[in-house]
Amino acid sequence: MMAPDLNQPLVLPCGATLSNRIAKAAMSEQLADRHGHVTRELRRLYDIWARSGAALLITGNVVTDRNALVEPGNVIADNAAALSGLRLLARSAHAAGGAVWMQINHPGRVATVPFNRRPRGPSARREPVPGFNIRKP
Picture 1 (cartoon, rainbow, N blue to C red):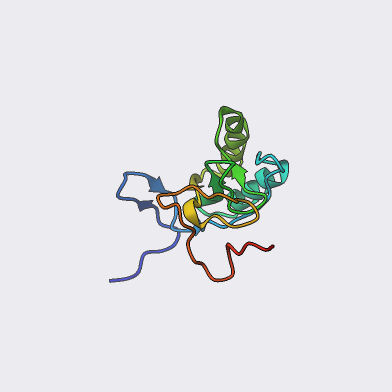
Picture 2: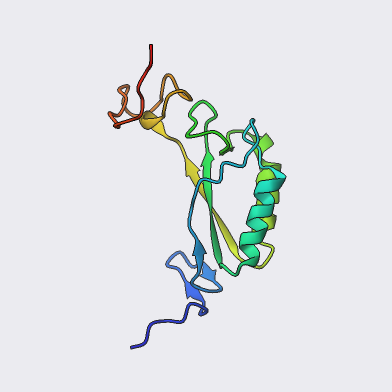
């Protein structure tokens, strides 16, 4: 049996059909503005990726709580004000007929200093991640 061609459509178990078998993996672009809003640069990047031929674009971290940041420059979607920028990002990603899926993120108790002094998660204790979460005097 021959391996499928990358240009063949792919029907996913959820019922979605991708036009080919090429996907842009999630990565952290860090191109949101200082308020966590989608920027023109971020929309342009997704437009370029969409025109590259990938059928699926998975976004970078989209943080669900501005009090639980992962790193600077991530998009923050914790209120209705974020919707207009996210719609524009989706339009850019759909420019060539591809799909865009959002990687939602909340760091929970592994939130890092200096962004989160009091992480929120299922445990009140910080995760002992080497090199992270070290408080300096």
